[in-house]
Image 1 (cartoon, rainbow, N blue to C red):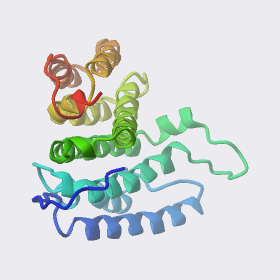
Image 2: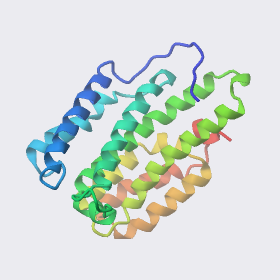
Image 3: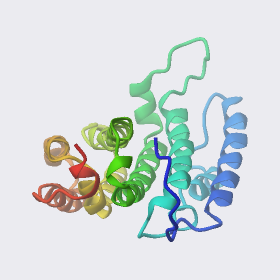
Image 4: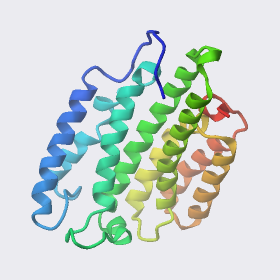
Length: 244
């Protein structure tokens, strides 16, 4: 889908980022196996576990800094794939492999980990959206064929689903004020990039979701969420937003 023509761009994902991610992911996998043997998963509240999790969500080491360009896309998608696996590990956990996971219970028990996973995924998506937009600007008219256009739409939808899941989590009545703040800060800090990668209609839907959650949030979480709403309420439509 993203078979790129032969151009060169400055990648802002650090050269050491993939190695950092792979090491953190391997450590997480090993720790998860240990914790599963005890009927649980690595916990943010456990100082030893938290070190492993913190490495996995270390944005400066793994993601670097913007601007992100088309050459970053393969690395960003690899990061997204591995970090999504981590999220699913918690969301779909079952102490008894023969039983279906209780996702609602998992969302409460593992909210520290799921919230931080959501926040990191939002950062990855906010990096991927301008990188894909850069890819689109570099395409020749004949290279934007129907198959590629549909592939890009599908990618945009997949990214949006992750952001939407994060906004829906804000409506959970059991979410602690600390985790509310982690999540809303993740949304607010990346709002401009998310807005450019989301269609106007989808922006309105995201705004409606967070506004429905707003009254129940702690006061400290309401201000940054209002910044998120303001950014997504702008009428401009750049980058992936304009892909039809």
